Length: 330
Image (cartoon, rainbow, N blue to C red):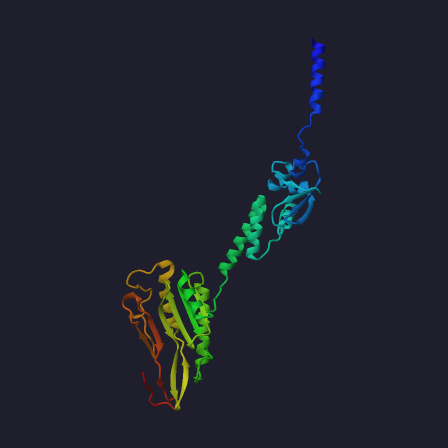
């Protein structure tokens, strides 16, 4: 009986061996059973071909290591290339990081973000952290640099002021917009206004948005905005009659400009309170308009008024010898 059972079992094995088994080799050709038995590996990443070692791909606990160990399936074509359905633009940078542990990153923010996305996809945590550190460094440099937008159109100006969360100080500076000659001190005062603008930018850069306008109608005019609306305006130009001809005079009301800049800070982070409280009361006993200056209130009531401060216009001034009377016409 045992001999017959043995013969019967042998016949059954022969029959099973004669029956065609399902072909599995075709699947092995398309899927990666593990590449650890090889030293080198060929990678086709979105049409970009790369040739590297298993050791390089296994340096970090990443998607690439799991492909090498067979934990993650990957498609292998008939020529032995491991096909990765991914853009190959930055894959060389990923490989260089695995080789060296560090790699120069692109300075362009968009390209740096693309590298970060690739590093996150391949789960190369060292490169991910490297990209995040580079982005933080770029952000720190950007915040420390004073950037002054230049107004190119009225529409752009309105959009910038309406969307900005910071208070806005605008200097309108257009020396060429003048029909008359300038008085002797006008050029110096114009430069002083520009220098004051630069100093204020350096001092309040992170708190106030400073913009320049060289296309406007005014020769020299400061405008102060908070919560998307104009709060105050300081005009520094006037018309002077000298020796029967008109001249343009540019003033430098430094104290008043600095005062309005401080006042505008109450609109920082929407901190303005009811009643239009001011850091410095522009009409208090501690401030004065100075010679030749006047102040106007807007037509709207309450805290919606716009303070307009400017030197008196249409001043008749005879600059002949001392002792001559000066006549002002408003």
